[in-house]
Length: 279
Image (cartoon, rainbow, N blue to C red):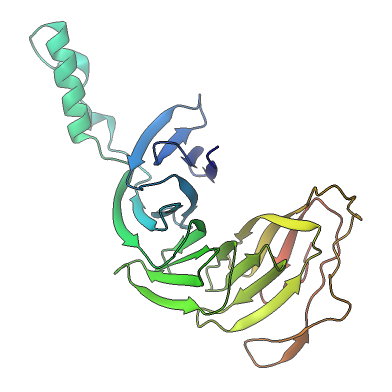
């Protein structure tokens, strides 16, 4: 069964869909679930995707171990650039229809342009990816590779978080990377230089299902769910260690690791620099 990824675009109520058997990505309208556009380039099903905050770039990760960078056009040409069937001039209805369809397709500006970069460096299926137009980078992770940074402009791998294994990543507008490690049940934040800012650990009976940063780059939203493993969840998130682990922030100050204590399932807003629950 193929994994299905969905990304909601608030600017025009469209959905991005991946994970199709034909390895494509699709733009779906929320009005009648009409497929507006389909793009092909991956050699295996798409497993994750991410949109830049300005909606100019889209990244897609796949089981083929690559990340593709696409340029996304939010607007199509005005109706005047489309030639209607009634304006195609003389000829049979069939020829008018064929001519109209051909000219519409030829003159239509596609929403999805690319891929404009093929990003490589991972050795297994891409689990998560995100992109920032302002910072000019793509951040991605896979289960058997470090967290990788690629340049939007050149497509080159320019940095990796050595030894950091993540199953999900997100990137703030201020350049803070948040990672989630499903096996260690740890949530961490790093600078673009790879310096650890903060780290917290969740109970082994819980999991983070989604992560997103705020537009101002200061906070993050996470969705926390209990793991259904046949045992009842105690209802709270607690540290799985008896003692807190000391970590060192970007400024060199020592802090105790944070313990998130909220009922599950829950949606939490965290401070990216402390990983403390805001509300």
